[in-house]
Length: 312
Image 1 (cartoon, rainbow, N blue to C red):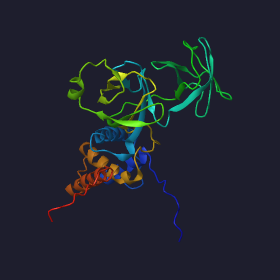
Image 2 (image 1 turned 135 degrees about the vertical axis):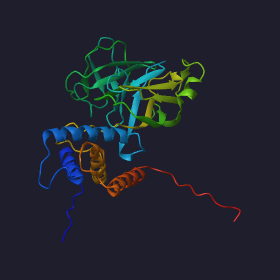
Image 3 (image 1 turned 45 degrees about the vertical axis):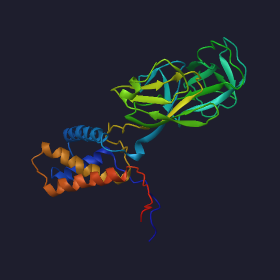
Image 4 (image 1 turned 180 degrees about the vertical axis):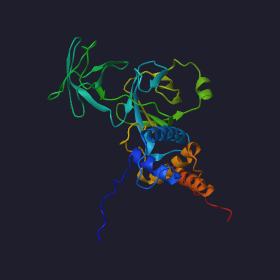
């Protein structure tokens, strides 16, 4: 018999909830949960997933972000309410000016419009310390982009142009960072704890960033940099742990790999156990805990180092 050739098996929110209720004994085979049961279980499911974000490092949530700096700026907000310019590496488009522009221009000519769409945020480098930020006004054609706010300074041929669609969601944690210059060469920079950053000398010092500290806060995180940028073409690129997406609707698929579905189901049953008169056995609870431990270990990247024993 031939195999399926498929590896895209998935389950939506309500199927997991129904499965958890059956394992709990609160739902008979073939029965469908009531709307109230779905709502209550969904509430617990989302709280459980939010709690899991604090436990261990999940490889599939590791994402690459990029921050376009502003000259002499000491900190940047990262999140949906930010007015700073951070996005994911996959969302960022970089090109260059093909024809020099002057103050008042509402169009720019670039080397390539690939990946740039109407409504995108666009930044046009005018000098080593300034970027003109605006939005793309209409679909680009050929190599020409129409911008919403006219140029406020002249732009030279080969000046950098950046465009992106969405601002970054609030990172839970920044694990690694590096600075990338205009030649796309990257240098690692230190991600430090709060005390180490705030014990640094003059925060307004300028140069190439070599140290960052990230404070996740609640709505938007804050990224502190030192020293502050003296060249806005130096991007800060960073590896961050993103948030797991909420389960808002019945048909939502999980923002988890398929190997997590059984663990989610068992652990949701344990969480819901407190609200039903069908107590779970200790064996069931221990199985659920073991599944979670196994997957937390499985989804954590580690380094194995061999040290020779010269005394042997």
